[in-house]
Image (cartoon, rainbow, N blue to C red; front, side, top):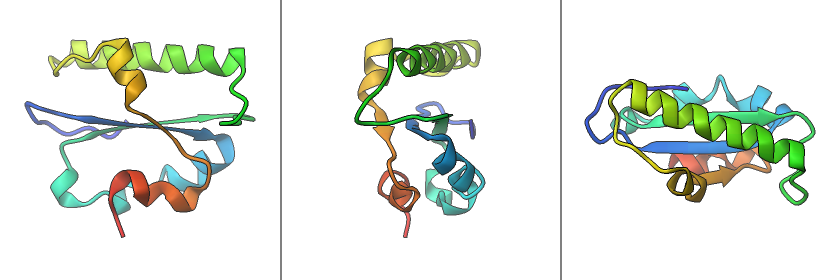
Amino acid sequence: MNASYSSSRPLLIVITDEENFKKIHLKIPNLFKFKQEYTDINLLGIKGFDINNISIADNKIIDDFIQKIIKYRMDNNLPRYSENEIRKQINYLEKNEDLCKFLICK
């Protein structure tokens, strides 16, 4: 998680497979523009993840990830999001080249 202080503190959630995770997790700080510094970026890489065939095990991992986001925000007095609100914000990344679609970078 990449986090900075802001009273509104929106969040961006990206879920991908382990391969894409390894390729992009170190790139995010460089791609994320200064004007967007007050957004929490939550990146989850799941081994063998297939966006077109999300398994029961994958769903359990995602559920746990969502609960950790909720707890983090509560523990840090950040604006609250319900589980349903967070689920609506999930972005599934199939190709690492598509990362800028979510980060609004060039």
